[in-house]
Amino acid sequence: MSKYTTGEIAKLCGVTVRTVQYYDTRGILIPSELSEGGRRLYSEDDLRRMKIICFLRDLDIPIDAISRILKEEHPEKVISLLIEQQEKALTDEISEKQEKLEKLCELKNGLKSKETFSLESIGDIAILMEGKKKLKRLRLMILLTGIPVTALQWFSIILWIAKGIWWPFIIWVAVAAVWGILISRYYFNHVKYICPECHEVFKPTLKEAFRANHTPTTRKLTCTACGHKGFCVEVWGGNGK
Image (cartoon, rainbow, N blue to C red):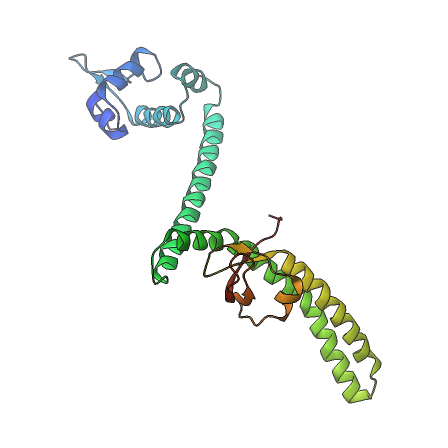
């Protein structure tokens, strides 16, 4: 079985020799044996114990508390729980950092698409990034609610052609009209638009928005702030999360 000197165990655990000696004086890491010359010698079990102590110290647990934990009948249960909590905390931190990294990449790519760099362009991109996921959920919700309406449409058409039964098609027309009005109101209540000229975020009237020419992410509108008429970028503008 390997034996480690104070210096060796300090190096393996990334601490100072004085720290190892201090833990000895506190009685939480007593060397397994002493050499003939009186030097401290530590075993593999001592090394594992030292690594546990270092882990607990990294969690800012006081020396006295560590001493009490290690004296428990089943200290491994407490330590296991602490490890799980630390693992979760690190996972959450990684997720948060990854989200920030994705935002930075989006900002970087967004700036590349701008002909001129300006504070206004950064502001526009920031607004787009903030509501991107919410807009995606909104559009997905509208798509899903439209599936039954589309299914009813095809069913009524096939039934009319194959059987000559026309009244289901009339029902579909009524359902589609009501669905279209309600979903349009809901959609336009949850979006706003950025004017490319003055960079103001504004909300058009439902009538103007509904009739305007549009692409998946823009709509040709008149800015309520500067009066510019042209394609404006659609962003999230609802109150929901």
